[in-house]
Image (cartoon, each protein chain N blue to C red):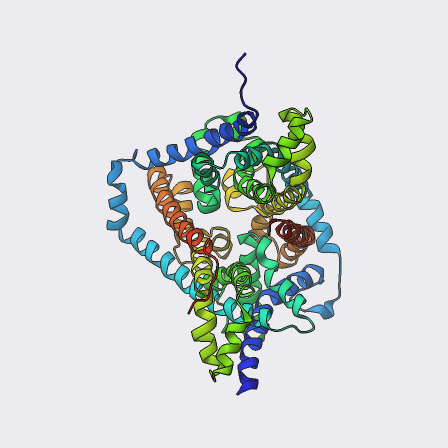
Length: 267
Length: 262
């Protein structure tokens, strides 16, 4: 009697599910992108059509700006929270990780409450402070959900830095800013690259936030959505999805390869 | 100088906290205020919460049902699979694990588009709640597998199983009586992550839902677009009340599982 090994039985349901709902659908998506009037030249068309090209550029620029801002804010806050113990520290930490479970739509609403027509800023200074529906609103929304993600990665890495390194630098007479730039940041570099890649990928693919803010700024997920639902341009929606998927996937591979290395401060 | 180098990071930390917290507080207050334009002095009320309940209680129950179904499916698919991956740590397992984790890397919108193109024409499936369930399982499954796998990888499964095998326990018995109890912290952390993410999932769900099947976040998008601010805020408040305890439990369970793996 030939018996199927027990471990094979264990993996079989997963294999079937993944084949049916991940592998075949993704293959279908890739094939669909080449089934339009342009065939596979559709990928060339993305680069030649000003609307798609500018969308791509805007998405990359906003995502880069958000990544830079989230890294700056979260690294500062993360280092401060790791290196200082004080009353209320855990409350601050809880607040900073709260948005982790918020969907993009809720984040969009948070920005509307701050900068919408009935928002906090517009109530205090009427007429001047409606920024929710512009690129500023989009930037703030993306920053809102990026801060917790970056913070957790940075704090995990910062906790592993040997305090002796910093003390040595202090004994040798280094001023605080030199300790930050010559000791802490190099030790954090792999974590910062990993966190940055994650923040960038999340911002590139963020749909809910842009959807709620309904900005006049074209970002890639919104264009994919309108191509699919309004224009019924299936081939272009598929092609743009493939491009978006490849970019975010590549980013997360980078993140994985860097966060895999343990943080060791050499020298 | 010394004071300044401490004050600036603290200032930035507090500013970041304010940025995240102030809109949450505003939303909670707006959901409980009689008239948001006139401010808190117009009085507090539960009227908007009641209105949310009348309008959207279906979406709340659908989300809970979906999250529980999603949990059941990810348990059935994910826990045995994680065990198999832990027992055979070769390149084949790595490739499969990477592939299953693709939904973490590919935006939900693209995944939903792929599902719609392949299964969109099967009306019976397309219109049923199981179509949304497939999307949620796809998205949450990698979290369950990784959570269980990391715990299983940290214990000496081989030795434990050999011991049980010499005592006469077959593979299925070893899985139920030995593997599952040992993996429990990972299963718990994975389960809480799956439920939390499923309740809050929007990007996939928005594409997969039908007018008769609205989940909580889909209902939120609807309320933000068409309801008065107080109702939208009250609805958001209901969502917070559900998601924040889940998030905290998830963080607690994950930290607990992590202590075992290190």
